[in-house]
Length: 498
Image (cartoon, rainbow, N blue to C red; front, side, top):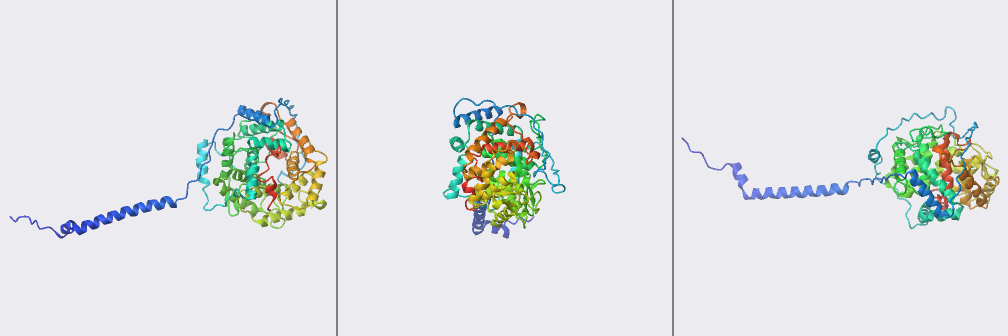
């Protein structure tokens, strides 16, 4: 029997060779180094995760009452004002309203209701929808003349600066208390999905309030309801209504429809596009929250591309010949976005000036709806738009404002008074103190004080009848906030540098 051969094979000799073993060690070491470098590169090259918006619980109705009392005391300590009288039911006007889409112009929205979800689920879903863009247009930096003016004006929306602005510009303890009651009413009428609806559906109201609206755009309703909270210094980052504002903003972002012309928020009417974009842009300007940059940028692009290329205005549908009311909301949204640091093409603003030239009369002191007419409401809107565009014909502006202010504030015209209050205060017009005192006090007196309608308003205003109680309450609160709600679009810095 042959003995086994103990002679090592070629492979065994190769494995046991010291030179080969050192080669193995070197290869393993290099591999580990390469893996470490790859991990470092991946960590540094990955974009940072978007900062989530912090959510806190909204103020209760009792807390809102405490806020209102504190605000009133900060403005003008003294005995409490008498409770306003109950609001008598008003008949709706059958006059033609510029808020009502013309037949076959703007199809009725068929947007389905958003399912009710927990707050955490809404936030998580929205965080994935609005990813941080690759490149951002930086907001106006502090340290510049415009940046400092914006920061100073925004500071007036809360705290002691807010009280000082109310005293200095013509507000009162009663008007501030009315603002807080209005905000509490708006918060109670937010739907579970974060939206507001002109027909008051989906909220705690359950038929408890009269005078529901008929406009179907939920983006328009949500945008106009958010603006009073922002005007009083409440954002997704600060304030007693953080959750209310956060849910509203996320609802608007969830409704953006990507299109080749930009982010569509209209839901059948450009009113919705303008109002919703304005709310998002104001929130961006107040917080510099980068998660809002992409939605605002896309919504602005839709407004720009929807402008009537010939006439320069906007109407219900993209490209239609413009009207004064729809154009004003688009201009406000564009101006607010520009002040928040986003780029808006200057030809777009040139087109607005061209449109105003087409509907002006009396040398620019009065304005019509789609043609040159001296209508009170559209004249107030047109004159404020002229201020937005930095129009330098001061004598004409003041003459037009004087004519509108002379009869006093319109008893039912909440829309006209909303615009005229801004224009008179912006111009520091001699008629402002007297006109404002009457308008302020009539708003306080007309605020609902009974049952579920307590804190709300409704007027027989043909200009805004389709918006119903929700729109009227938001406009009334915004008007009473005018003393400190001067930016992003309502102050000197807003009209400078156009």
